[in-house]
Image (tube, rainbow, N blue to C red; front, side, top):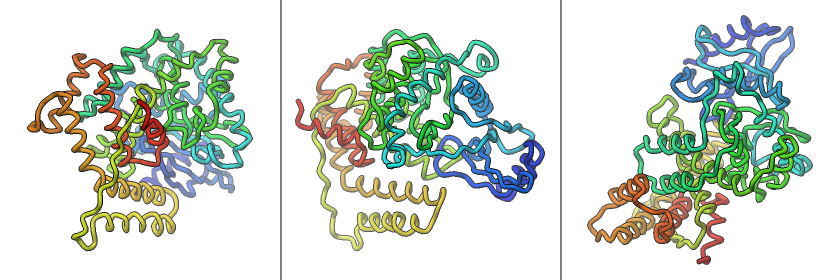
Length: 473
């Protein structure tokens, strides 16, 4: 949809559907938001400027009603219900209809606050908040889990997903991508074989993490992004906020800013139920497994549309971050790290020099002269170029070692190719013929993913955690 057409249609909604709104002054899409779009809107309200927010399906599309998700209209209703239960939430002003011709979405209150995890974890203005944030989050999650899901409208909006179903659905989603990633199959098996009896099924936010709640210097001011909510095991939410992907370099397990003890204390005060740390760590493994699959799903959407952005493509490489976290939780141990190869100095300029120059241009010049989403995508693009540069140096030896390890594992001889051996391992993990306690298999998977993340994101904390065990047998 052309920008002018989009602006005109949104202006019509603002003036005809929203109280005390006389016109649309401006609208701008915010950075981030690979799964949905978020906009900041300035409207004329009786001669004064008022700020609103809009959340919309990517490219103005409509929900596939076969998906087991509440959809954006359901997300708006969940925020209304959460607000009534004492969970900080923005007010919902209007839910888009087909007649508006803008796609699925809703318009809501603009709330001033910080959602960027790196800032919450590191900035000095949030130092006092960080002392109590994990405890407050525990209480908020407890209130979410106490919302009644047995009566309309939530009864008709939410799908019930017991843990076994959730694991299998996530595994099936990955299988549909038709890409052999043995560590994902190993983790799915591990999760099914180590599952404890489920708790009473409750409303699960399912994406409650740093980045999906907003804070000021004193408190949490809004819980957002309910698009994946369902009825399931409450420990899913407690594990997800502790997944390493959402610590943003912080050392503490809860979002990078708090302790398990504080999170559990807040939760237990409201629910009067004791939290088992081992269960939460189990759900951390599941969270990383789920996030790896979501990352690969972004690549599938990048390839098939409707949003073929560099953001979606790049998120696919974050799957290795999630998988190295699975390894650190399930089977930590020694790794053999590949050293970068020397560039072949026969071309002028070399490929690595060209990539370095492009990365520098994006980081230093484009980012310095842009703002908003363009600035964000310039950073993502620069990071993608850096991945390509590291891959040029490390990938040949990485692939050689993977092939040698699988040939040795299957005693297949030098004629077997990498793709067929990977698929052989994947199929044996899926049909159960390959056991999980084989130490040579664990060593192979651990070495593979640690060297893969050396390509994809060597600054990731999970990579550093894995390397701290390099000399551990």
